[in-house]
Length: 206
Length: 275
Image 1 (cartoon, each protein chain N blue to C red):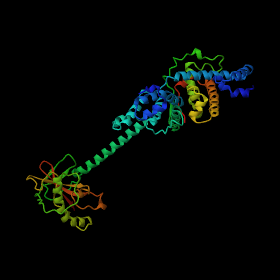
Image 2: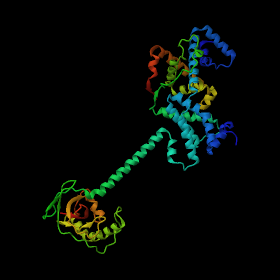
Image 3: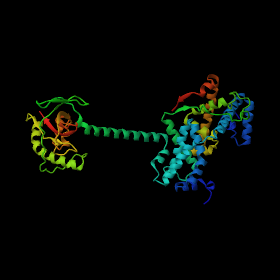
């Protein structure tokens, strides 16, 4: 039998549904990171992201997903399921976002990311990263999706549009609008609200 | 290029997504000439830098090991459906686990409630509520742990089994031998008391009483010992336990009975009384 690591998603999925645990593990390790991060970027909640990741792969295992390998990539499909799961959780209106107190920015190469002549200040300063993270979470969902996919997962416009199921121009427009909102939010917050006080802020959003 | 055209490429330029070198050069040229657009591109570049830093930071994020374990167990259970339900529960999401536990708790509560009801029904015979002495020949008073009861001594009634009339039902909680004995006595009593009790239920008789009906584990002939009986009130459903007719319209009204006690306080038999 060939090494599962060398197999494509379609074959791994076939083996998984036949009960091959090693094939599933390869599939899981290949895709769990993006799925989990997408949920985390959308929700800001690790526990919820764990739940979403589990539900996405459970659907895959139980064949309740209706995934057809001939109609699209597994990655796009998983993003789609994760997107629906996250939206379902968020739309319950019960999610309470709390920034992770243990969010550790120590490993960031700060100096290398400092922009020159920056009117907003250095966003890569570690305390400001939390502010940026918080600002992203306040964006409307469709803007947040665009930022999560194009900026944080660094997908192309075409890939993001395929995952979300919209036109490339729509993604581009949403990303443009999202960036404008983020600049606006961060500019305002820098003038009015101390960053440290926001770190532990909890709030509800729908 | 004017500011409006520049605006359309602002995000792409800040994020280094402009592939055309000529377009990029044109955009940068405009930013060099327009201070407003230069300020904007600077702000967006800084935002893009922050987003890249955040992406780098979050790139190491992954689902917890519990998710992997739960999925692995789910896969194993799917392959082998005989896997224990405990393993299956580990593969569910937290809200599903909560729902499962809530269901289990509800089931336990229902079972406990049912057990309590059964216990109350079975111990209903022990609920001594009446202190009225049924006979004038009261010569002793017995104190019990429960409410005060009045006990009397009198000549032991003899219960002689007679040919039974076939009865279709029997109390479900009795042993077979006792149930047969109960059926024999109850059948006889039914036949003889049916009329009297129905008269009593309808209020046409002044005083009606059945013969003594033995309890479980007590033979039809009681041992020779000093005996006492106490007047109690029992749920009307006790009539059915002994195979006697019951007026369903008066289900909530208790019935009076005399319980025959042995020297050790054990209940030997009961007779139903209506004054």
